[in-house]
Amino acid sequence: MTDKLIIGEVLKPQGIRGELKVKPFTDEAEDFHNFSRVFLDNTEYKVISVRTGAGLVFLGLKGVADRNAAELLRGKQIVVPRAEAPAPEEGRYYVADLLGCAVVTEEGETLGTLTDVRQAATDIYTLHDGAREVMFPVADGVVTAVDIKAGKIVVNKKRYLEVAVL
Image (cartoon, rainbow, N blue to C red; front, side, top):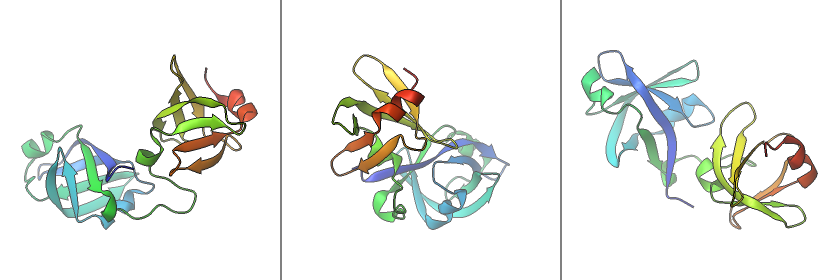
């Protein structure tokens, strides 16, 4: 497990006072209200304002006083220490904890290693099997168990083969 979590990405400056328009990687944009500080490129910033709307976050940071300063942060990932992040609900996981897990069938056959999670109405997992990348949605019945401590995601092979893009 990593001790830092990526919670969003700066899309662009918002207005002329240094506010940032952020794409959140949290379940809810409102989760940003829980953070008093964030890190961008290992630099700590105190959060001075948070607004949300249309699934986006508008973030004001101490030391980012104008549009020019905000522009320098475009495309940067927003990181928080894991200890300051709320614990995920039962059956939910941080993407950082899923990445690198082995994807195996219920019979124990290893299909590959999880390399990416794309958030959508149904998350899309990408695994690498040594030769290629395979994408599959986390649709009903595909993932049957997740064991972060063991680094393993168990899938129903029949259902996986029905939805996987091989």
